[in-house]
Each structure stands twice: as C-alpha cells, then as structure tokens.
Length: 227
Image 1 (tube, rainbow, N blue to C red):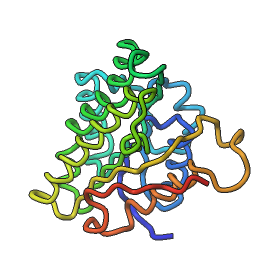
Image 2 (tube, one colour; image 1 turned 30 degrees about the vertical axis):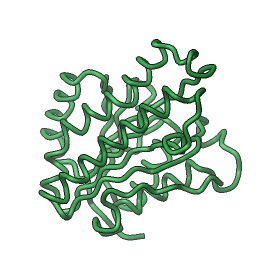
Image 3 (cartoon, rainbow, N blue to C red; image 1 turned 90 degrees about the vertical axis):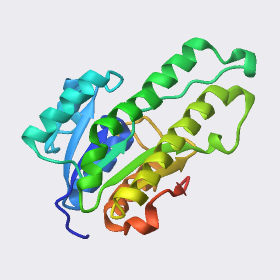
C-alpha cells in the first residue's frame, strides 16, 4: 500500500467506522489523531493512534483549544475525517421533534462546523489537504419520518461543498468529499459480521482519500457499497 506520512485527524474516532478507518490509515503509513468524547474509550480502542484527545466537538472554544494542542504536539493537520453523527427518526412530519432536531444539529452539523473552522487553514496549507464526512442516502431520498435527519445531513453536505468551492479558489491540491451510506453499524470490529461490511468500505475510502488526486475527489458525493 502507498506509504504516506500525512497527519489525519478523525473526529468521532471511537465508533466502529472510526476504529476501522484509523486502523486502515495507520497501516497505510498515516499518522492518526483520534478525537472522541470519552478518554477511556479512546485509550482502550485506539491505543495504536499517534494521539488521542477527548473533546466536546460541539463547543467551538473547546475545538479551538484542541487545534492549538494538536499544532503544538504534532503540527499541521493534512486531513480531517468527520465521523461524528447519530440518527433520530419520528412518525411523519408531526413526529419530528425539537429534541431530536437539537440532538442532530449539535452532533452532526455543529461538530462539523466547529472542526472545519478550526482546521480548514491547515487543509489549505497542506500539499494534499483532505476533508471527508459521512452523509446519507436520505438526502436525495427524503421521507416524512426521516425529515429531521435528512435535512441535517443535507446541510452538512452543503457545508462541505462550500469548503470544496473554497479549495477550488485557494488550494487546488485539496479536496472535500461526502461519502454516502445507507447505514453504518455501531458494533465493535469483534462484533461485526463476517464479510465485507459498510464499515470496511468506509475504511477503504479513507485510505483512498489520501491516495487519489484532489481533482478526482473535490466536491464529489461518493456512494459507498452497502455490502
């Protein structure tokens, strides 16, 4: 596999997809920084990472502090992979609760806005800056029961596409991309079913993110295989 010394920050790293992606990237030669909401889980599940940081990514002040710490300890980030999320549904439009909306807005959109605002200058300055998020089929397949979730994911894609436009103007060597899935399992790698899973496809996409030219990636919406 192609050797790389790129510094990759994974937000939401203790999920099954985060662990699988971190493993794949380390195997490819990247230096991985794992960020999550619980230091014990980070230390237990990602002991192989080059750095592990507990941070409330919904708090911009905390994220700015994280960026300062990362820069002091490791230098500039070359890639940001945003895997923070969650899902909430509801019965039709009237069942789309404010509580669920607030949860999704905080966990999906606010964490994305905060991390990208803190690290986008790193990506612009890198000789191969990369940003990736996990989006959902629901964005282009809206249903009443999934309206909150689909709307938040659509907003996240819009944010990423705005950064992609920034890259076309300021950093042609950089790329921002949305990976599209139907669902990702939250099971640990040991509990996951045998065979190629969506989580494994995501891990492969993470390594390809560093290997493919920016012109092939920037502003794209890549549908990952289901199984």
